[in-house]
Image (cartoon, rainbow, N blue to C red; front, side, top):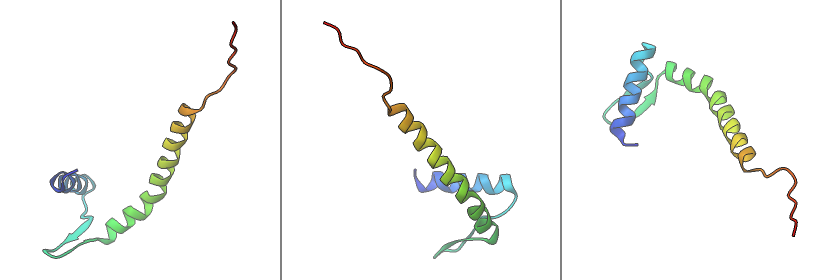
Length: 71
């Protein structure tokens, strides 16, 4: 993703939540307290989603059943 796409997504999220998530200066970008709180609350959700997606992928790649070959 380009920087402009990420910046726009952050602006949309901040507008939707009604809170700034990042403090921006010309030299740095830092999470605001609200941004840090959101990060802390979303981290377990994102980790859980990652595990679910990995499980689905692994199950889709599993081979199960009986294969019989007859002449």
